[in-house]
Each structure stands twice: as structure tokens, then as C-alpha cells.
Amino acid sequence: MAKRFESSIEVQSIKIDTVVDHPYIEHGINLSGTIYIDGVHDDESVENIKLEVFKVRNELVSEIISKHSIELVGSVASKDMQMIPFEIMPDERWIPDEAEEVSKLILRTTVLVENGNEFSDEDEIYFDIEE
Image (tube, rainbow, N blue to C red; front, side, top):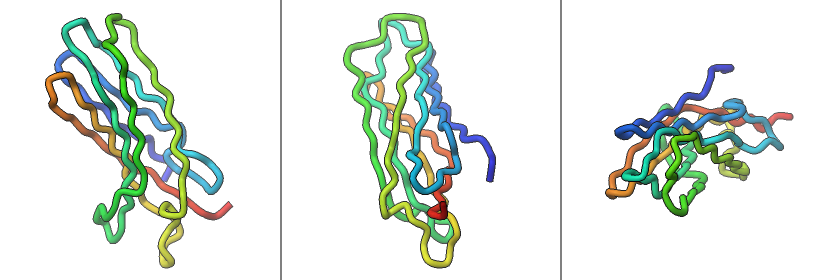
């Protein structure tokens, strides 16, 4: 389960990468990482980025257990990369079900651009209650 988390969204010349510090999260550790936004110019704007955590049960995405929204104020007029750190604190909904040792979760990144279109990508993360 030491695979790397990969989530990347490309919209025209904009690239948004979500990088998770640790895709295998243990009890007492928050889900943390950085969203990298590259290629934003004057005529394009990312308005909102939403992170959602879903719990997977019986190989099906069953319920949303956490949300984190990032409102971008103004447009990024530079060609430089913008980095947005995030941290999501697990709660009791992240705890593995009785028959499971770890919870299999999905972290979905959704980007809302200026014209109202949404684009999403997701990958798996894991939560272990054992210390």
C-alpha cells in the first residue's frame, strides 16, 4: 500500500496537481498535502477547488466523509506556479469497519473554472486506526 497518490487535472493551459504527503494515514495524523496550480493567465481563472474524501465499502464509493473548499480570490496573473497547502483532520467516519484493518478512501479534487465548468480527478488513500 505504499503507492503514490496521483491526481492531475488539465484545463486548457492550466494544470492542477494534488499531491498528498502520505497516502497511508495512521491514527493521529492529518491528511495533508499541496495543490499546485500552473499555467494560469489573465484570461483564465480558477474560481474554486474542492477536496472531498469518500469512504469505499465493498469496492463501491459509499459516502462522502469530509469536504474542504478553497476559494481563490482574484485571478492569478503570473506564470509562476501557485502552491496551496491543505490539511484535513480525520474523524470517526474515517475509522475502518469492523471486518477491515484499514479504510480505503478516495480523495477527489474538483476544480471550478471561471466559465462555470467543473473538472475532477481522484485517487486512493488509506486510513489505519492502529497506532
